[in-house]
Structure formats: C-alpha cells, structure tokens
Length: 307
Ligand code: FUB
Image (tube, rainbow, N blue to C red; front, side, top):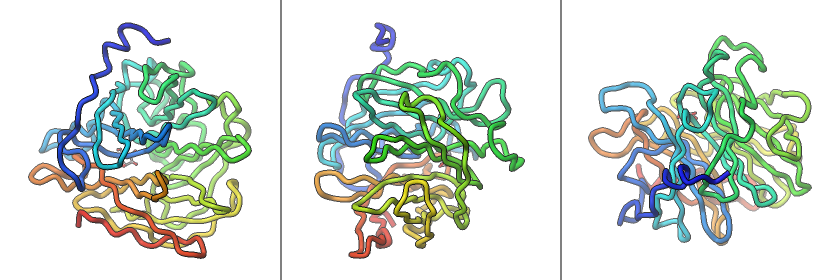
C-alpha cells in the first residue's frame, strides 16, 4: 500500500540534464535499461551504478526511474532500494524489467538472495509506473536452486517479461543458459515448467518484443558483449538465430538492451561506459539510438551515435 514513508522516498521530478544526445543521463551512472510505454510517456527503469572509480565490480543498491514524452528530455522520477523493498534480499540491484497488466505495474528485478546461494528474481508491484512499490510476493519468484546447475551463482538474472496479444504472460531470464516460463494471470507465480532456449553464445540480458507477426528475442552475446537476436512466429519458439544487432558498446564489457516503439519510431536502448574520466564497465551510462527493420522483418545493425 502507498505509505507516507514511501511517498517521502520518491524524489521530486527534476530535469536529468539539459543536453541532447548520448549518453542520455549524465548526472548519475545508469545501466541495464528497460523501457515501458504508458499513456504517451516512456518510463525508463535502470540500475544505479555506484562503484567508486577504482572498484572493478558492480556496486548497485537501487534502481532509478526516469520518464520522457519526447525521448530527448528525461526527468528523474523515483528510486527503489533493494534491501528496503525485499526483506529476503541482501542487495545488488542488477537488471530489471517493468510491465503493466490490468492497471498494475510489475517490476521484475534481479537481486542477491540472503539465504539461497546466488542471485534471485523478485517482483515489486505498484498502481503507478513510478511507485510507491511494495514486494509483490514476500519471497523470490526464481532462485538459483530452481534451474540447471551451471556452477555459477549468477545464472538466474535479468528477467524480461512479455505479455502476448492473448493476455498470457511469460518471463525470460538467465546467464549462460536462457530460460523461459509462463506466468499465472496474477503475474507473480510461475505457471508450469522452466524451459531452456538454445541460442548461440547466449550470455545474459534477454529482451522479447513483437512487431507485426514476428517475435524477437534479443540478448547479450559473448563477452565482452555484443547484442544478437533471434526471431520466431511463436512466443514459445523455436527461435531462429538471425545474427548480430549491435557491437560491443564503448568502454563497457556488458551491453544490455531494451527495444521499444514510441510515437511511430523504433528505439534501441543500451548502456556503455562512455562518460569521460570515470566511465567504465562498472560506471555505465544509458544511451538511445534508432532501430530499423528490413522489409522481411529482420533488423538492421544499430548505428551507435556515441562511438
Ligand atoms: O548490472 C549488473 C549485470 O550486468 C546485469 O544484470 C547484466 O545484464 C549486466 O549488464
């Protein structure tokens, strides 16, 4: 429920910067973008990279929300802290994705579990795209012990949720192995088995979208990461690998994408490490470039305007 305490935690809307171009946010380091279009506004959900300059690993305590009505001017709207939101989590605001269903907003997140070894996926819920948010389940939806043991503790990360035209919802996630499962209509429970998707050089960061009759599954490929994609006529696959969509993004070994259509244009949203002096793989910045389709539905390679 919205509480006075929650309301207090939401910063007032303020312009993120005055400039046009990439990176789109320069007053904070931002990573792992996921975008949601709602009522002629784009809501951008990102992780907040807070690693000090000499630290060579992620330090991420919270996610941030930005919004824009023109894809140029971005306002910082709210923050969500891992340990204040999820009692069962110890920290690490890794990649996340927010989706709307029946007037409720579900923010699927990656965090570290306090008791079950490794990363886990949880869900926050709100009546609005900017919050206030509360833990939707009081427990993780997916934990490291529910999937194939790849001997890494971070193989259950990077949720991407997709609602098909018939209203059925699916969650995709993974590192090294790509997984998917159906969600129950309540959005907060798995419905049936966890399935694997064979994809060449899958690293992490799946994102699923639909255009016309085609479903697209884009993902981080190899390491340092490029973005690759596959296409299918069915959300449950089989997925046909189509090739590289984006090259390694400047000064970052990860390249985490979101794809949306907004006001008739298609956008590829990702991160790099391009902020001068201290930008790096652990101090990343969100960027946006146009995405173009070929007449047969395949995707043209992204031209990064930051390189
Ligand atoms: O930001 C932490 C992790 O790095 C994300 O979960 C991955 O997608 C990669 O970007």
